[in-house]
Image 1: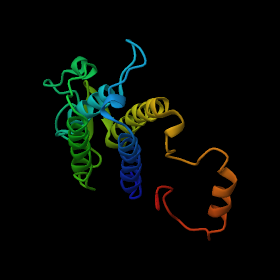
Image 2 (image 1 turned 30 degrees about the vertical axis):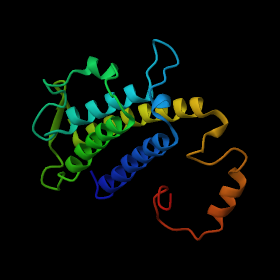
Image 3 (image 1 turned 135 degrees about the vertical axis):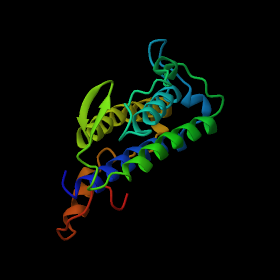
Image 4 (image 1 turned 90 degrees about the vertical axis):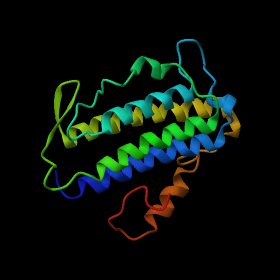
Length: 184
């Protein structure tokens, strides 16, 4: 793992969190709890799953298996939040656990093998696994948000028919080393 990996990964996690945060800001409680059908999940249910996964994977992740005995994954797919605020508190708890534990990675322990359901991962592999997992679900949050807001949705990326203007702005800047999320 080189020295640029952890700062880059932190930026990616922060970016994914911001997509969720910006989605929640646009939605009412009713919209957060809406389900397309009985087999689909509401945004609130997906948040409950992400937050439960985060607490399980990142609590003592250097020393304990990422699938904790206290986790009830199946219950994560049953919405038990009563309010939007309760959902956001749980979301924040999950992210806090992730960020606190990512900051515990040091040059001395970064070669540690960590386990998820008894499967060994390098720290980079475990991080990549979770980054992909959370990105997958946060993409679902955004799509559901767009569905329920329809034309009132405020885009979280380059707006339709605005690519040329966006690219012109980017190419008008001098080349430099920066993260794509800088300035968002």
